[in-house]
Image 1: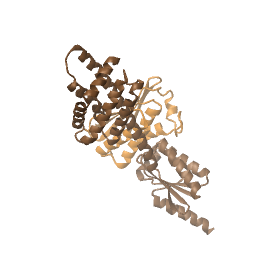
Image 2: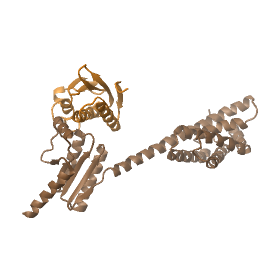
Image 3: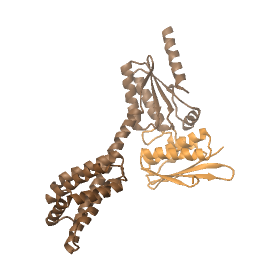
Length: 278
Length: 134
């Protein structure tokens, strides 16, 4: 059900005439639903801005939310959702901020004739539409936040550290899926180039489950590093992991594997010592 | 409680991680040894990924079992995917119809105590595995 031009105009007038009472009632309602987590003054500012946006949209004869005249209102709603989502409010708490307008309007609406009722129903569905739009924006912002965090986590969890002169190490922590394996490989290969290190240690102590997918990613990384002339050692093979790898039938071929990072470093230092001695 | 069957729908890589975490928790609860925990979690990881990658997604159901003498964990992986046409081939080490190492299915069978597979081309695959406490 869309608003007719007449209805829109009547409500625009209503929102204008009763602005103080409306904003007060609306703000009160929102303050209660958010249980004091935002200050009254802050909410009052938000609701009065929203009232203005609603009023402008209706004065511009916006019949639904997709029209040109409602552009300002859409921007205002999207802004509200983004702020609420970032502040950690739930989707319901965000949508209620819009729904509360209905109650506020009901309070200032006088008369109980059929026209008023029809008007109110039409206006109510307009507000519903606005609240749904808020909900959509809220979800979109939250998804963006999650995607951002996943990316940050990816960056955080894959450091390549220089352990010794000519020895770099990648301590893998957590789940090694394809996306992380790709990041690890790129970082490692780039670090090998940047530091000119002939040795790389991949430490899997922090990987809780070493299955064929993890093994395959690690093996690919080792092969890539070898192609660049670096020797790779896999460390952090705990007893239970060793038994599981054997049962699975994964073969690491001639790749050196060690129980701990310290063993791997000792092994590398022994190797370099031998070379120097010759 | 923890004796009840728990079910996870597998539709993404994150779900495989959830399956691993659930099974790790259940394995700890029935006091599987660390090696057996790791074996079971790894087998579940392989089979859940098969459900996802080859079965096109499905479900994983975990129950704690007790045969009177020993406790254990039973896991059922079910999908309505294309099924496996040649089981012998599928259980051959190193054979893969995807891009993996070809060790997941055969390796998982070696990692658990009981392994049962039902598959029909075009209908899907159901794999039931059990690991008992030693």
